[in-house]
Image 1 (cartoon, one colour):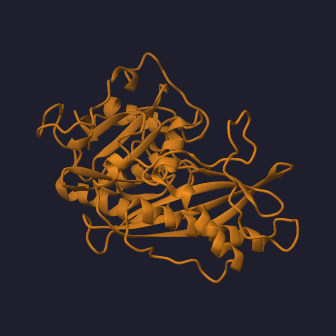
Image 2: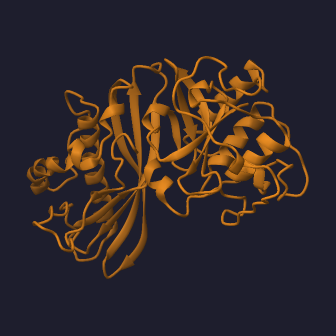
Image 3: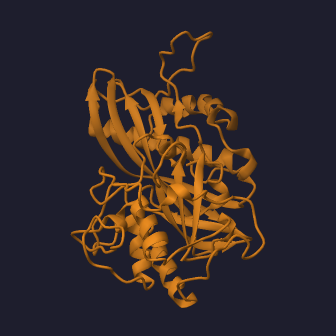
Length: 374
């Protein structure tokens, strides 16, 4: 979640090699009754994380009062310790992107841990992943709409219940991960034919505002009513999964393809690896349906269903935005535009299931943007 913590690592380990001064202490989370990390301890630490992140939200968006208080589920001694941790929540320490905070007006926000899973247990500690939902009520959206993000937080916790590391797997984290590449329906296999004109020959787009139609190479492919269907589908399923389709761990392109199908794009059946074919259902998908790079080559080169926009700010609801992470040959991520307010596109996408995220809150990512008129 770049707006809250652009740095992936929020809390450092107690052991810092060659440190010039004593490191910050690890956050002391609620203690379990035994040395084992039992279910109750995992739950208590999840509650502690929830409240800490809520405090970060309040500081980040400069709310006058917290929207949530520490609850009775915490140990009494935690109440006094919590205040001492506020120094860890400063914008400087958390890498908060101050230059973009004032672009949207957050009325209130809520942080909820939706789920937790123990990933591994080693001598260094137990790794637990908490799925944290951030929901922000922003003035630019109607009362019935929110900016919502689901961010995985990976915590390393020792046997005493002390948190050693917290890693926020937000947009910035994903763009810097070497494994975050364009995915095929096989999820790990990427097929690139250098003889086929592809995105490696496209310079991407500017994030600077441009006058209407400047840099655009073709007119819209879908009608306004069809694009509304794209938006309606994306809005409905951005935070969950449609059981009519197969679900992937990296689900961004699969999700956008579903939305485009709902908006009128037709299946093109055939060999699933072909960049000229496009289809998906509950059991199988073509590479172009679920792989970011393959989708690009189908949409832009093979079918001509998408055309290049000269600026991200030329996107309108129903259009698609992709990006390549720095140093990557293939597309890394696919999103659909679900709102446009005051000239700013709002993006919705899967993997970190997100609804209506303002582009201004992600424009600083070190990526190359590819905006598509659909």
